[in-house]
Image (cartoon, rainbow, N blue to C red; front, top):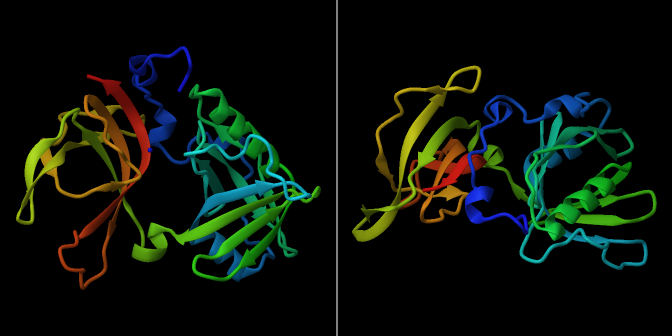
Length: 268
């Protein structure tokens, strides 16, 4: 949705960060120059309307760049307005970006969250950050899915595969904070008995402090894309909710829920 010397309970201690509850996380270190100035509008739209998943990282001779690809992990990159976010390693990376009329991508200095993880994930974060810090020539190939190639001056190449973002599919999101109980509860899904998450809505003021009381607990019959529940772990999630356009597919929920951030976790 780690540290070698860290127990599960210590890894999942509360992670309150007021910046996580407000607009963009750790944004102060990034360059916020508008990315569209003089750039190809179609390329800008494509970058912003897709979630890009890293497929490979190779050097000029076609050999893998050491440390970037970690088995079982997948880096994703998201361009939103003047911000770029990279996730999938140890920490979330955030910065600004610009695209020149010649198709050169410049990523501002990336700020990161402060988790400690296993060495391969932290090395992957550092290796990918170093590649993205260089001037990158952008090559986009149309297709289903589209492909994005980012080339460094020394001909190292990052290849990304694109999927439409939820905003591109459904329009603007409504942001919610949902507390997920440690254990699931029995529920009915259609005619089938199932286990559902138990959730309640949380609200926060402008300083990131909880507003009490919370909403009532209820069985949650949908799924939250990007979230995997661990029994015995309580979470507070920042979630984006999208409304499906009518007519709805058979048995489809009215809404699509996508995990934006795990704000707090603890073992109960």
